[in-house]
Image 1 (spheres, rainbow, N blue to C red):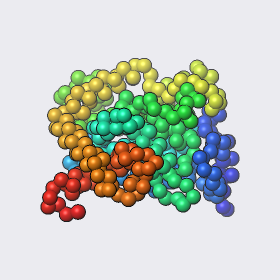
Image 2 (image 1 turned 90 degrees about the vertical axis):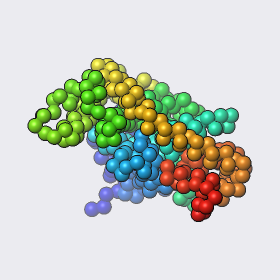
Image 3 (image 1 turned 180 degrees about the horizontal axis):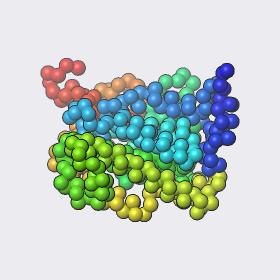
Image 4 (image 1 turned 30 degrees about the horizontal axis):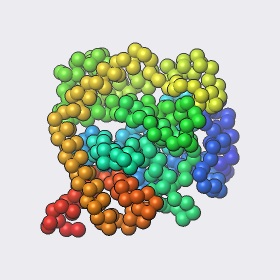
Amino acid sequence: MKIFREELEKVEKRTLAPYAVFSGKSKGRVYNEPPPEYRTHFMRDRDRIIHSTAFRRLEYKTQVFVNHEGDYYRTRLTHALEVQQIARTIAKLLGVNECLTEAISLAHDIGHTPFGHAGETKLNELMKGYGGFEHNVQGLRVVDILEQRYSKFRGLNLCYEIRDGIIKHETDYDSPNLVKSEFESTVSSSIEGQIVNIADEIAYNAHDLDDGLKSAYLNLESLETVELWNNIFKRTDDIFEKQERIYMAIRNFIKLEVRNVIETTLKNIKENNINTLKKVYSTPPVVKFSSDLEKLNRELKDFLMQNLYQHYKVIKMQEKSKRIIESLFLIYIKETNQLPPQFQKTIPEFGKERATCDYIAGMTDRFAQNEYERLFLPFKKM
């Protein structure tokens, strides 16, 4: 028996909570298209994101460690997949739309520059006076304009709800302060978008602990001062080897965080009498940690900031990355005919600064480093 989109939409109506986003009631796309035959609208969008060029490039974009420093460190791509996995679990238990949650998870970092937040900071500085740079805004720009895969429209033409989740993505390191007027009518993102925000935080705390310990930038002795980690690690059985205990502790950390989010959010939903999507949009975010765990997470994040993100080797790579990006930006601005033709064509519409910014933001770490060598080292092959 063939399963068509209409049948899948009926399943959503029967199984999802009343505050979920139903794919059949999406606010729609910028450009009208025939509906998918055997997928929901959100399934189609998830697939479009996975097949996009920008998504594939996340494999070689920095999370904390630049890609060439080790094959086992997280990249933006593996981070996105870990966020997706955590977010789907939470979405399932809260009774909301898993496919929408997946799509936002996979796209939430699609606008990131090479070299992580160092690259974003430098591009924002270089674009001062030209609209600045913020990766949520760039992510929306990628899916709305820069991806060129369809003849009838530019971009991926995603549904409003995925685009809203991208532009309103918010963590300690992502601030949606440049939300376009199209998305200003709601106080909060959907529950699905809120889940991605908190799954992002759980994922990067967990994998940065893991990568930090692997790299020896962090050590177990110093982590004893972090109450949340220390409590979890002490409960792992000391009959196991140290590395196995670390893996067990990371898993238990994720379990604890996910369980807390689910329990706290269900409580918040009940207390705020959230029984419709309209109520979700008009109510401050409800997908949260308990106040006690939020405090413990704050201590952990402060520790990671001081001991991992500000480790002298990480800072050296960040500063080197900023110099690479600045050099590329200035040489392209000075001589725009060195930009690829597809970016030169956008200059009349967006200006040479934005066209250059789009090109650099889309680069992988490796490509940016190679491009720097091609432009500045006289004997490097073009």
